[in-house]
Figure 1 (cartoon, rainbow, N blue to C red):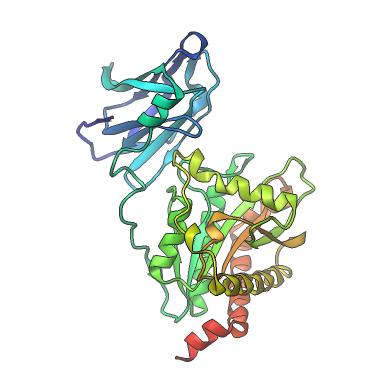
Figure 2: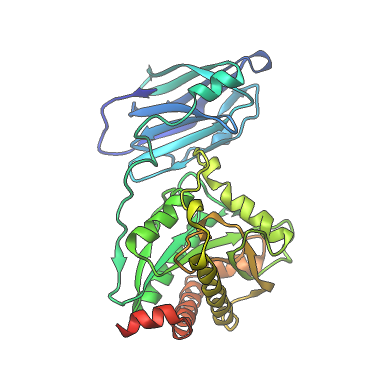
Length: 380
């Protein structure tokens, strides 16, 4: 379902305290009301596996909106909000069961507007048949061409994890998506200063689907892929950086669990799971790329040791979706743990970011001398 209204120059805002969620008896119905300061274009659809309601808005800024402020009459369904691109933002609500869309209307509400959506319980079969993003809805269609900085022969893709609707790990007001973006920008500058060309899968607070992150890098012809993340645990004693490479099975139960969490990002953001690169994982190229990735991960860990805390077992492997490109050495680097006071202090320090980024850039430069494939490219 889609509704259109005139878009103003300044973004609209939503008001959590004036919004509402009302669940009918035993989940037979659901009414969602999102209060806005003015009408905006919108689209509404459901997704299955698990059942979710997705509300997309054009020209809406979620700043100041807290889903916990929404007035509830029954139900504890989880709600997530955030950007999904330069022009659109999204609200995803987990449904307790299959519920069919009945109405979706943008209505006048005092000086502003209210998007009112109603759903009624239906059969799993009917829900599955009616669910799915409408044609043309993000993230389908062509991918944008990311900006490339620097003039070197080797192109490095930096992938700051999460973003937009997906904040990643959160501790004491610090969000993973913000910290890895800040570090990614510092790493971009450090790499460009050492003669690399650099692109970023995102350079703002936007959600990028997991497969699109890899597709953007391959589309640009990237030679190396570095995905940046941070973690959080229940105990502050766990600290330090970890470098992950791809493996069909996790090198430890913790590594496998970490991959499951990261690979669930698309579902949390209201996407159906997909694996467009999964069909090209076999063959000699895959084996060679995995070996090159392992050497790269070792080089990055060695580069980090003098300037950052490194976890006791810093080399791990698991089946991360963003590490599945068959033709591009890829490493997922967890920079530290938000649950560690020392790591959190480092991650929020501009000086630490600059020093650590430069150390990683130097480590990558040293790895080039060991990597025969890229060494040959540099000689051409």
